[in-house]
Each structure stands twice: as structure tokens, then as C-alpha cells.
Image (tube, rainbow, N blue to C red; front, top):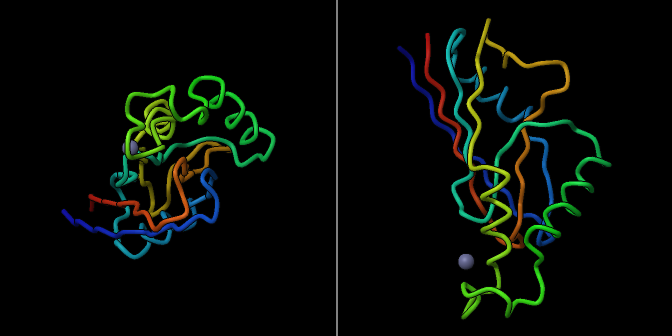
Length: 138
Ligand code: ZN
């Protein structure tokens, strides 16, 4: 069995945002040489997510509005976590959007449905944060 690990780093200029990382993950799959296997992709920070959905800007705006209803950023004082930090909302947004995805690799390619894309979701940006890619298979 082959095993391959790679880290990606993102430093978004805003507090929140989404980055399509499908190409980065496919590149790692190609580098791994794995033709049949699995790829785990996870955020290494507790205020960021990795998830699979549509690459459509309207939907990403809908995510933003929905997450702000569930866990509004402000006022910061509404959260017990916000003593010396101000990112309680980011922890909650990450929790509902998920930590990781696991993708099938078939014939050396991510085996996806037509509209499936992998995203990095940032909820407390303006600093470098990492994503882990772990690939296993033959
Ligand atoms: Zn925190």
C-alpha cells in the first residue's frame, strides 16, 4: 500500500471566505501515484472547514447568510468563549460545516459527481492556516 501526505497553507485576507481546493487535491493524488484508494482532506484548525459542494457564488453567499443567522459574529459578548478571543462564532461555523472529507480515488482521479468540488471554508482568517491531505491506496 502506498501512503502520501501533503499540507496546504491558506492565508485569506478576510475573516471569512471559501477557496476551491479541488485542483490542489487532485494534484496531490497525482503526486502520490495512487490509482485506487482514498484521500482524506481536513482542516488543521478549529475555526476552518473542508467540505464538498457546488462552486457557485450565490450558494456561497447563502452559506454566509445562513451561518450568520445560526452563529452571528457580533456582538462578541454574546459568547462565553469570547474572553481574550473574539472567534466563538468561527468555532460554531466550522462545527456545522465540517472538519474533513474523504474522497474515492479511481483510476488516479477523484471519483466525483458532476458538481462536486472540495472547498476550504475560512471563518477566522487573516492568518496562515493549514489543510492536511492524506492519501492511501495502491
Ligand atoms: Zn477560539
